[in-house]
Amino acid sequence: MNHQFSQLDEGVSSDVETASAFQMAVATVLLALLLQLFWRCCCSCYCNHVKKYVSFFLSSSACGMDPSTIAAVENILNYTFKNKTLLVEALTHSSFNPHKSFARLEFIGDAALGLAVATHFFCLEQPKLTTEQLTNLRKVIVSNKKLARIAAEHGLYWFVRRKNIEDLDYLVKEYEGAVKQGDDQTIKDQHPGILADIVESLAGAVYSDVDFDLKELWLIFRDLLGVDEIELPKDGDDGSSEITGAQDQLYGLCGRRRWTKPCYREEKARDRDACKYVYSVEIGIGDLVLTEKGYEKSSKKLAKNSAAYLLICNLQKSRRM
Ligand SMILES: *[C@@H]1O[C@H](CO)[C@@H](O)[C@H](O)[C@H]1NC(C)=O
Ligand SMILES: *[C@@H]1O[C@H](CO)[C@@H](O)[C@H](O)[C@H]1NC(C)=O
Image 1 (cartoon, rainbow, N blue to C red):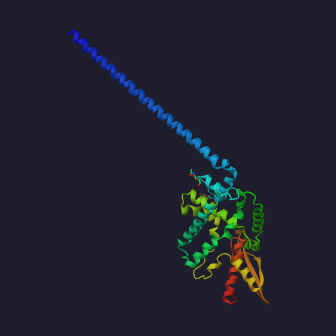
Image 2 (image 1 turned 60 degrees about the horizontal axis):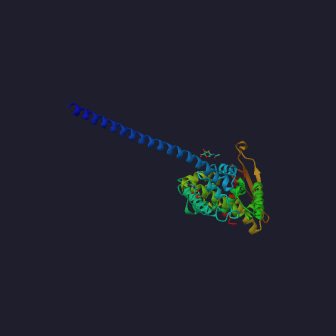
Image 3 (image 1 turned 90 degrees about the vertical axis):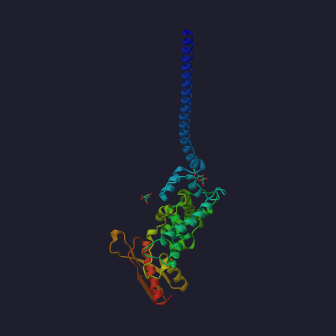
């Protein structure tokens, strides 16, 4: 009996030993797994950080673009790119890298800007614009002339990577000088095409960076395009094509009719401290001198435009054009 018991005891104790050895093994394996998991986590965190830094360098300095250039353009746009590679591409002329120039971004940017402007004015409740007015507004706001002017005002050309195109450098410098001096005739005659392309390629880069969200593109670009300065046609106002560009139109008209060229004079604004301007414009038709005073505006340019616009309206009313 005793013997049997002792055998039984042995059996039980060896069972207990096997069980605890089994538990130990399971615990060890679990621990090992946990450790491995922890290690992988650490690794991937670390790698992600390294990757972020590497991609930052790859997308900026290693792409041959100074981080300060990137920051300067981001500052002008008031937008920080998630993917800097897009911005670098938008600032690469084909003379620098024909395979990765801004041409593709310019293509999508051109279309997106046009649609963003069209959508904005289409959705306006007050005033509800006619098809013709909508067409004119879009034409004016995203015209190459207007975009070139914006590029010149911000010196965007000089951020673009380019090679051996000194002729173009020279043209751009001349044009920028004309814009600075408000020399309307030069501005009208020649605007280097590349300037509008740059604004469009930047728009394309932003549009792509915001995942093709048209509203976001609009919020970012409306300031740059100066949309709030655009004078909307009032109800019953049929001069929709003269919203802006009346100055150019008057100049062209005088040239064609051989009238004396428009002469603008600054008038006293009621409230000069509020930075308001008033201009009058004068043209000569043979012996006849016509003058018109514009409305008070927030800039000299708009004030001149207003005077020109009213003069054109008068010419139309008196059937001289
Ligand atoms: C820049 O954009 C932010 C919104 O993203 C806006 O609050 C800020 O006023 C803008 N700055 C300028 C100078 O337009
Ligand atoms: C950044 O943009 C470039 C150019 O379009 C693209 O090839 C790349 O995949 C983008 N990177 C990320 C992280 O989205």
